[in-house]
Length: 182
Image (cartoon, rainbow, N blue to C red; front, side, top):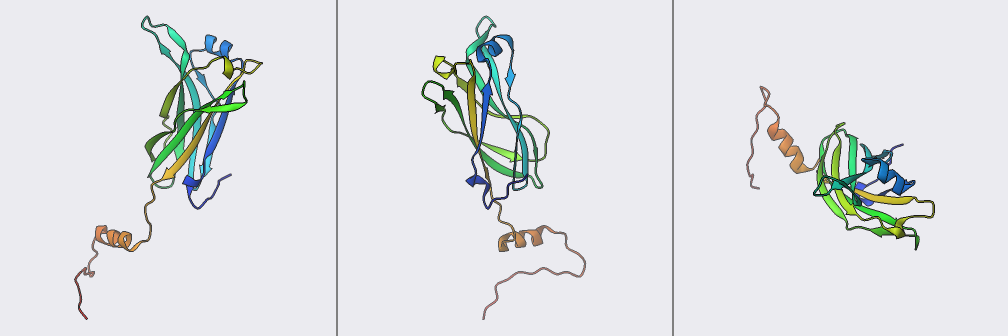
């Protein structure tokens, strides 16, 4: 299903990722990837994921806290290449008070084009501490994503003139410009 809205930037997408048995998962795996999720709005079809990666210490050993939480665009499909500003904000759920703890908002500029290349848009160091664990050992992280299209005015007088000027001249067509007095 595609969402059609007057302005894409009015929409904030939210994706929550519950990680079951977090301590056990982190101790056994070298990386953790969320299930992918799709955004389909105004002709921008994209697939995203969150991932957790680990820093290595001076001796080359994996550090399990803090972790690196990454936002990845797995694929994108658009009709026309366009620039967009992507705003995103990570959060981790505080199970003690049932409230999200938000990181600062991050921003990046991205050329939206049809691609299957994975693009990592940003990351945050995230310390997971006791207050983040639910009683069953689950930890939840979340991202809010906002896509702000860099609007190109279509069918404006200036755009029409530019198109006329860059088109090849066909025989029998004469272009002239000038200022005419009354």
